[in-house]
Length: 347
Ligand code: GYE
Image (cartoon, rainbow, N blue to C red):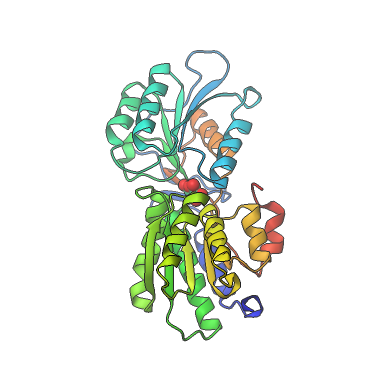
């Protein structure tokens, strides 16, 4: 039973994940909880303000959709934090995972004259004109959750996960697991991808794509499950029908992992014999680590509302804030799941 197998390299992994957690870096990035606000908002001088004098800052939140447990927790953290008692009013726009609709959502927020925009982009392309329009309208814009590679002078700050680092954490965990358990079988990976073109998918995919060839790992199947449970199940079912060998599932979020596990169970597979790697860290997924169904989760923090609010308040007060701030994230496996479940988000 695989859960009794040693999970090795933990110390090394801890060191690796800690290296990504805490302290400013020379490129103007920092990590939450470090207390550091190094870096600068180079070339961008808009700051959030109560421009209409109604006593609150109106924040327009262009949200991705409602595709996952992570997303539900993320939305809730904004709704809970951005209230009058904290000096804010929230205008919420749901893109329903539609990248084109989301561009219109941001344009609508600009037209409504919100005082700051928070954009969690569905996908990463075609944003420059929209960001420029916000800037021209004098509305500061924050990117959260999914980073964009756009010019620094188009946004105030980015706050959210470091998706490629999350992928690297997962890859390193698998490498250590294989070594510790002296696994000599070929490593055949089923790769369930998130929404294609989202930076969450791109970063997590990149880490696996970079590592697999050099480590001799085969990716036997790769398809998007669009970050949803239903699609994760459907895609896993279609793979299982091909009857190919596999011993690892690398699933880019917990919801697709739930779907994949349902498909495995329905096909009569021994779920515990498969190494299952997931991302996020919903409470139910952490319980599945405890139960021996999921082997590791690369964490991703959805509770961004208060942390974004803190950055807005600092910027409003004239403090320099980092151009990029990454959430603190590590991993959850059998060594720490009983501890981690106590503070896990969602249900
Ligand atoms: O991992 C997934 C969600 O962008 C980090 O989007 C987010 C991802 C998260 O649908 O569950």
